[in-house]
Length: 534
Ligand SMILES: NC(=O)C1=CN([C@@H]2O[C@H](COP(=O)(O)OP(=O)(O)OC[C@H]3O[C@@H](n4cnc5c(N)ncnc54)[C@H](O)[C@@H]3O)[C@@H](O)[C@H]2O)C=CC1
Ligand SMILES: O=C(CO)COP(=O)(O)O
Image 1 (tube, rainbow, N blue to C red):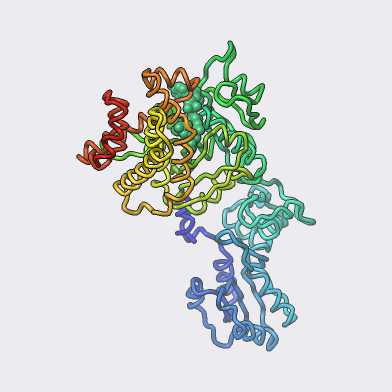
Image 2: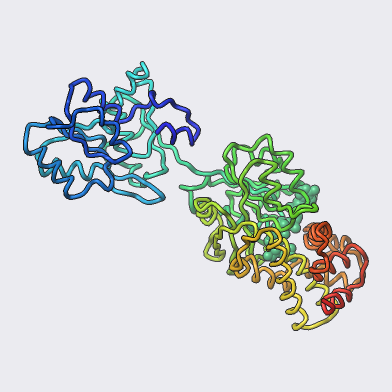
């Protein structure tokens, strides 16, 4: 018990822990009883010090697999066969473990009481005696103590009968009907709802806010309803964008025509937006992440977690993920969500899928609750790095696809670009991690995102215009995207620096060509020349 408590941050010495076991041991010692004990192996040894021959009392605790017919029958015979006291170490109905309800000790005790006609004396919850023992151990009056628990009868009812205040937490084994229990009215209840903040409010950021806002309302038992969305403040038609969003519930600049849920609150101060947040959802162009991290790192709530929807890499000679940057800068675990998700289509509720990359099974479920809707299906995989790399790398392939469209070439060439691009993506992922799973490329974050971006994305659009207009990528980004940002060329540079430092640029003709066309003024045609030579 002491070890378990210390793992969750409570360093309590073993001799300061009052459990039903310690309480019954005191009773046995005081009365010099000879117990017959039906408990599990973990606590069996605690009773070795007592003479257990010719027992004069019966003690039943949580015996787990020892609740066999044989053991139950032996206990029954002792109870009916003599004038023995019957002690039980609790009378709970059920407990929750690994997300499931399991039958608890009370079921076996009540069965023995029924058959033997001997009433058990409860040492432990919900017996008021037990709570009074705790109070006297602390040298305090019961009315100055608070019991916090998820069992409305065992924790809250029992402690309140002993004069303590009882707080019912709406977590663990709590069930909705416990809130209106016929005989127990808790002093107060507390829920474990997580506060969510979205860092970013661009095209995808706003679409994500629409999804998350509707889900925090739908799952109000899991999440705080209000979702704060950090807005990089700017003026639109003489008004502050955050003000427009909060009054019209529309991000008129980055996602016009889509109504955001009213529980999404635009917050222009990034520090204020993340204060007390439990889940930080990152959705902003990747070039801004580092600066934002340094602004908020002192404010992050201990235990907060991050999820990144950002497609890009850090610029480094080694492969450096954006989720790693967030984790290292803030000390929060960082999962990812990537997929075939052109923001405007998702915002219009056209059916789409996404992949959650998260290596913690329990958090996968939390994120699925936060992101899944009837039109946005999510699948969680425990291959986070591959999911994230797919999201970043497909933007380079989309730039190449745009070049092909700009050159006026047809479907065969585009398909070849997608196939070759997918191969380079896989090679690059393997370079980062041998454990990268083949199956992840068949999730939404893999082939599906590659296809949609190569046909409908911004990288494709601007790259096509680059070929046709002869203008610079920066000029076209400003001209065609209305403030939205292009990630593909930048990612090509980030990937090129890794390949260069490893001396393997020639193994990646597509990635290399995109970089050379974007940053070294190579002709667009060199892409096809390099691919046919490889
Ligand atoms: N738009 C889409 O369809 C999708 C985008 N993504 C990814 O999501 C991420 C975010 O993309 P979007 O939300 O579309 O953003 P966006 O491309 O609409 O970018 C504009 C956003 O950047 C902000 N911004 C501009 N200058 C800034 C600065 N100096 N500091 C901080 N913020 C600044 C703007 O206020 C605006 O919120 C990117 O990594 C993108 O690849 C992923 C899936 C779909
Ligand atoms: O990532 C996207 C779709 O999944 C959006 O891609 P673009 O940035 O090229 O529009």
